[in-house]
Length: 91
Image (tube, rainbow, N blue to C red):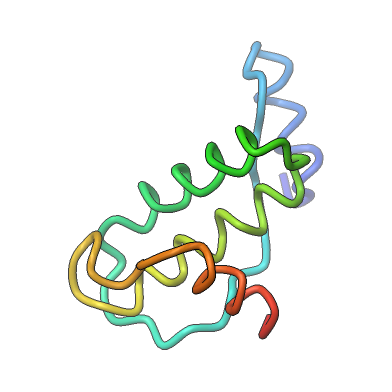
């Protein structure tokens, strides 16, 4: 399948509650992807808990994962919410 919506429909058909297929990446100088997925899902969950909608939470999560990639290690780069919001403003 080539269309993200079609890909998501397959997962949804089999009972997956949420399917994230494609989101444009934030532009960063990537150094190490270790922990990017963990930072992504943490950002996504934290935004949902704050009451954000799915798309806003995805954008925030995307920025969290991207920032993580800018330093070596899984927790060296991402320091706080303001840093994420700044990246979102730039992108």
